[in-house]
Length: 203
Image 1 (spheres, rainbow, N blue to C red):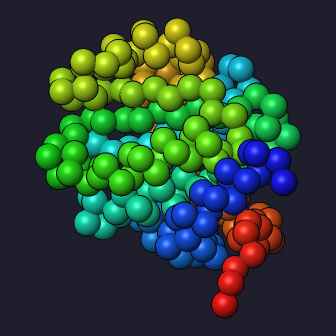
Image 2 (spheres, one colour):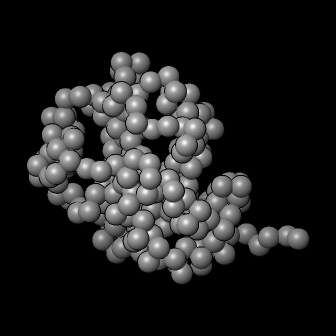
């Protein structure tokens, strides 16, 4: 087992309560009825998949918890793994904090942040090329983010490949994952196989 494969298996083991036998229909409501996660239909100007995550004012952590957000990320990455172009060119994440309030701030728990960072650094088979924060509250400005001036984002993602929400030329995006959910279901055999990988379970 390579070191990367071992780290993936260890991550699945350590997060079994969230990932064990995870299937799309378990998060169907979050995908279809809550505007939190979506994937751009087309790729960006570098051929990369772009994941849009809306954790601003429209996100209700009582209806879609941070743990569920992570499960959505995980299912999407399982589908994207099957795309040869995504394997080569990687993916980009845009985190949208528009109108983020205290409810959303408290919803992004330290445990969620630690799990997400561990996944990205150690256990993500795909190449995550960039993460962009947009429309973030002033409290985030101790770190370099894009804010509401999209020209900074455009240095990394061409406007021709971005929705109007981010100063792009494409139509405004519907933040729900309704378009992506059927794609996830199409690769259900792959997800079911993926659920069997990892360390052998002891009874």
